[in-house]
Length: 393
Image 1 (cartoon, rainbow, N blue to C red):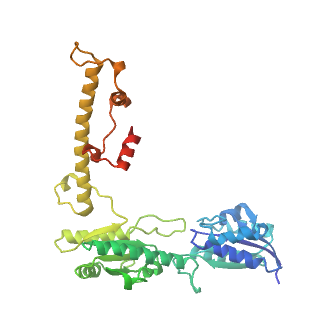
Image 2 (cartoon, rainbow, N blue to C red; image 1 turned 135 degrees about the vertical axis):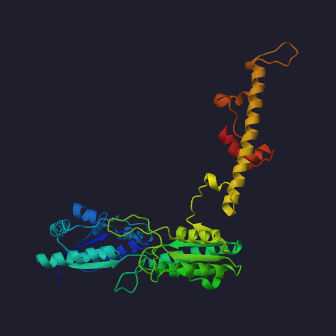
Image 3 (spheres, rainbow, N blue to C red; image 1 turned 60 degrees about the vertical axis):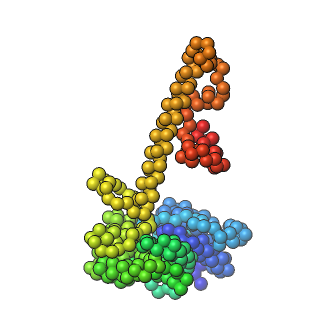
């Protein structure tokens, strides 16, 4: 049996159970006498290159057990793509610490790193066992039963979709477009349909494994929405057209050369709204994430709908409150000025040093009185509003 030390490192974003995989690997390693020391690389490949390793075998068992309930990555992670010049330095680190067992917990790119490290070790004649621990919520690693972390992500996606479906059914005039992670694999988005039987609204699902067709999408939206139950659309961030072009292109490339997906919900929402402007009867939409509303001079007379209408009403109330607030300020300043300059006897004049504390408080902050809330303008008293006014003072 090969004797030596073991090294485990994390790569990529931490999944909900990445520390559980770390705990399982360390526990099992302690059972094998041929593994003398269990090391952990701090911040993944960065720690390997810097020789920044910690002795996990020296950590008490009661502290190790806490890893099962510890979020994020307890030993750190990174998203560095190793270059051809980095791999010899990795092998030198292994030789320095007598690493004979290397565990790398990561996704597709991390598994590619495992392969390259192993090939270099074979070529250099260095005996090394390389083991890849599947870690990706996308659940798209080949030759695996499942990827730890996907189950938690799937449960979250299903519960979130069911909650948002309640919103869509409560206000069925809207179509809610919900974007989920999944660049090339739609497992998470597919999980949004786990509670389909409990959903009170209609539901459409679009995955990257199938080509997206705009006309078919708009036709399906109109058909489902016409039933009057509301509509939820769950879509993977990496959906694409038949030619392979992404439906939403951020124009950003990450450190591994992958296009950064995102914006699919906004793109589909725009499709629905543009189809409505073309004269088709298409419902209003509510996209998540919502598009910031920008109103130009040529759009001021356009009829406002939904959120825009509510926002416009709030703005009008604020303007009315500001006008009332300005009049109150003018009146307060006028009263203060009159009392600051005593008039003839019998005119009600009063010296400044004799002013009541209530009037004196209105002169703080360069003579400005505290802003009154709209409800306070209407003489509506509420504990929270009174507290807010007090803080402004």
